[in-house]
Length: 364
Length: 274
Image (cartoon, rainbow over all chains, first blue to last red):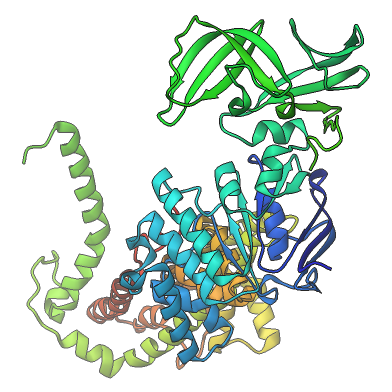
């Protein structure tokens, strides 16, 4: 049995199923990210783990103990909320002490723990202020402090950075990672931001419409997306994903999408009406590749300079392909380009599932 | 500063309504500091002669302190009981998921609209059976019943404004539902609790009709009844009535001023990102 285990969690509000058969295992000390677009049920799942919301079916166990019948206070968890949820009538110090006081810790212990948390988060100067006198970033630090002082078995984060501006988000993200490395406590972190998920998560679970799409490391999910949803969701700019069908012509598998036809010599597969072909913008080369590759010709429509990268928006027949290039490249709109895509970089999905077409290749 | 005609009208209206509502008060304040001769002068005189003898006789001849004590007892108990019942009731009505919540709240409002004359008979009957006539608790009971709906409505409005995340934080931090209510929600709803307390207290302090009917023993009577019964068979002691009324109003003024300090607006600011 894993340290944290969700088994067959289902949740319905009235007749609407918001979570369907969710199972997840995490080992002690792991940083798990629940990632998905808004409305996918990730926050509901977190609230079920916290005990704030009862599940319709399934079991939650924390530290080898089934906690389904336990209220949040008895689950030994701490939660950091999106809106901080600091007690406005208490000072920062009292906010930090609140959970410990409720658990009847000795005053000397409380004092020590507050000191430690304040050291860790550098919030000494704020201890005697009230939440309304703090900035957003400071409030979220205090909220984290309130979780830390409790020394819980499990930390739950519900989109803690989403109310902060971009720069603050980046710096707090790094701090959070440092925090996890120091505390080595299991953390479950809900976010819709794939950058947060990629950078923080040792294990990422992608949710969409209440169902688990894929569970894996950031690398696995990015390199080997399980289905078209994950492929399109992870990555910025997103993967070029064409919807179409597979067919066989002249003994060769072909991918048809609109008026575009792409031969796929690597795929030995009969035809299928529901298929996707995907390729990441950074996997496309503008010069011939030594490895087996397919070639597409198109016309550059727009050139976007992002500083570190240049994005080319290329029209191929009736489709658009985004290509990511180093800034040294000089291309102008209207120019014709030949794009080379190594076969190993192609993602083929049939019936919403990743197609593994050669042994030893493209497999997780 | 110059006023536009619209502002002038508005200002005039405000002054008129303030004067209208303060005039009776003003009249009995000046009456209370007149001498008996000036009180009875016809036509009435505007000018008091700064004679405070009525204030003295109120205490010496009319058991004023006893009435004050009774009223404090009754209004204080009513307020405390109404809050003890009203705070959890309002909190539950706002937060607990239950069927028919709207009907309960609507029902409360309906109950509070019953005219007193309709309920006074049954109330008298019930208290008579329970042995509650001529007791203070017998008066507190209907007062609580009558003020509770309003108190619950005021408190529910305040609880509804508070973010649910705070409660969840409290629950995760180790609070039971009751602790959450007392340690987190009630302090944040303090302005609402003070408002409900003030209104309940004022109601119980001023209430006359039920008090007159339920308390016939002069030793138990409250201030409004006591003052009304100053009048003798052949005399109408206007001066004493005025003096007692002024004194009866003072505690209310003091209480409102004191509680107002507690009504710190924006106490919940900073709880969540606004």
